[in-house]
Every structure is written in structure tokens, then in C-alpha cells.
Length: 392
Image (cartoon, rainbow, N blue to C red; front, top):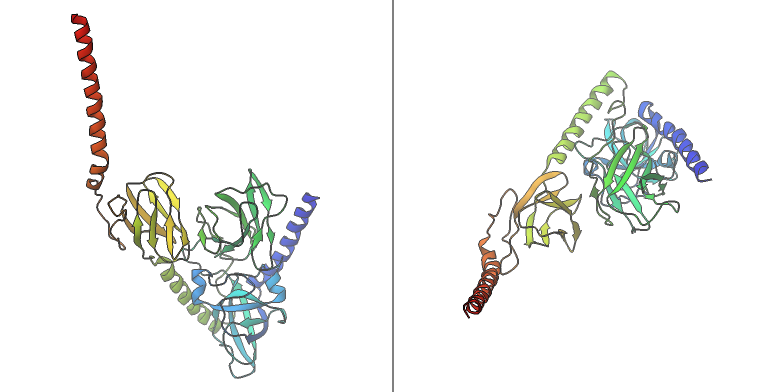
């Protein structure tokens, strides 16, 4: 029965994914309306939308193309759209192409129609084509909700194109996760438990070219960077083809969007140390994305809590420690040493504190010297006793 259900799910995903794929090659038409700005929506991103989407227009997709193959397949899709100039109301949709990002569903919209996440008035003719999102250097990240080692609900964030299926690797076997209406993937009863970390996942986009990633740890309501830094391949052209004048406009829009994404992807997150000991570290930094530290060859994932990144290495660390946010290397670095206050001087971006071992001398050298003296004294006393007995 389980195999039949998996085969049925795969067939349905393939059929409906193919339907959603047509939006990448065939121009869609419908009505454009407005629903006001919002960071919420049925897709469940909340405020943790992909970085590249922050410069795009957020939209709600019509019910049919929002659902796609299953539940919420249209979530995270990018579209290049424009108004046709027809319609009525006070605020016509721009007739120049702009890129939008799907974060919500419009239940009452007909196929081909899009509700725009801006304040406006009217019902206007639009045309659009699905495009590969301008992800720049961003790779897949993950967000958990209400999860534990016996139940997982995870969202895949920042894909270049929509997702068809997600599988969890448990005990060396892949198990199909179940898609939810709010764009998450849930574990099922057939999966062995408890889950362990890192968790290997196989993610298949609607193009069919699967990628394999590893989620290093579980923490709710934060974006966690995948360990393999994977991303889906693009589908077709980044802008819809039309008349020569339209193509020129689209090319300009695409170039601008790419430039914006590149700028965002290359930015370095700033951070500063709050506390450094051999077993516990804290630093300031952007709560988005994922954070971790390295001490030599050892990597420790950090959790954003209490308004700061906290890290607890599994072993004593006295070497140079580097903090990582997003994918930028060495946002701040310094040497972890122990002083009387158990706190190191503040380290700002691109600066480094020299390693000072002098503070360790009073702690370790005195008891070591006393121990050596005791051993030598005992040895000499014993030697004297032996010599006296030998002489007698």
C-alpha cells in the first residue's frame, strides 16, 4: 500500500509539475488586482523571505497556479509581469516588466490572475511568465516550525524555481515528506524515528533535477544554511519573449534585478563578540540566515536566542575563533582566552585580538610546580631511607 501511495504521489507531482512548467514557456494572461502590502501570506514565510526577494514585488497567485501539483507548489515562484494597459480603476499596473515573488494565494482569482501586494485600485489586464528567481549567490536554507526529534515540519527557502518533492534520508533510506498548504514539508508515520543530525535531504524541483543537501541542526523560526550549499538550475530565459520593444524593456529590468541581487549576495554581515570563554561564546549579528563558529578544524553551529548568537563548543577551544553569518567568511574573529572576568575584549569586523596566554600562567603553572616538587621530595626521602638501611 505504501509503495502504491508513493507511486501515485510521484505521478501526480509529475503531471501537475508539467502544468506549472508551462508557465515558464507560455505567456499567461489574467487580471491584476491589489491587496495592500504584507509580509505574511499562505506560503508561511512570515518575515523570513529569501534575501533576494526583498527587492521584488510580493504577490498572491491565483488558486490553481498556487496549488500546482500539491497544496502550495506555486510558493517561492518568481514571475516577470506587466500590465497590458486595459482595465479600469485609479492605479493601472505598470506596462513595463517587473519581477514579482509569490508569497500568498488569491482564492477568488481565476487562472492567470495575480493579486499584487501593494496598495492600489482597479482591475487591470496583465501578462506574465514564470522565471528563474534572481538568487545571485544564495543557496538553499531551511526553516523549522513546531519540530522535535520525533516530528519534523520544515520549509525549503530560497530556491531558484518551485519544488516538486522533498525526501528525508533516515537510516540510509529516503522517505517522501508530505507537503502542507502553508509550504512546509512534514515527516510521516512511516519514517523511522527519532531523527538525528545532520539530516540529509533530497529535493526535487519541478524541472526534475534533484539536489542533495544536509541540514546541520534543528532550531525553530530561524533560517538554517544547508551544509552542501546547493541551488537548483535555471529554467529557460530569465525574461519572457515578446515584441522587440518588450524584449528591450525586459532585458533592462532583468539586468537591474541581477545587479541588486549580486549586491545583496556579496554584503558582509557585521558582528562583534559579547563573551568569549573556552566553552561558551556569544556574538552580535543579523538574526537572519545561519551562524556558526570554527575553532581550528572544529565547527560548532550556533543558535540565535536572547537577542544574540550563542555557541557551545563540544571541546575546549583556545585557538583563533572565527564567526560566520550567511556565507560570508570571517565577519569577525579573535582569540578565545580566559581572564579574570571570563570575558574577552570586544572584537569588531576585520579586527583581531592577539592570543594572550599570560593570563593562564597563574592558573596552571603554580599547581604543576607544587606537584613536581612533592614528587621529587618524596623520591629523595625514600632514597635516604634505603641508603640508611643498606649501611646498617
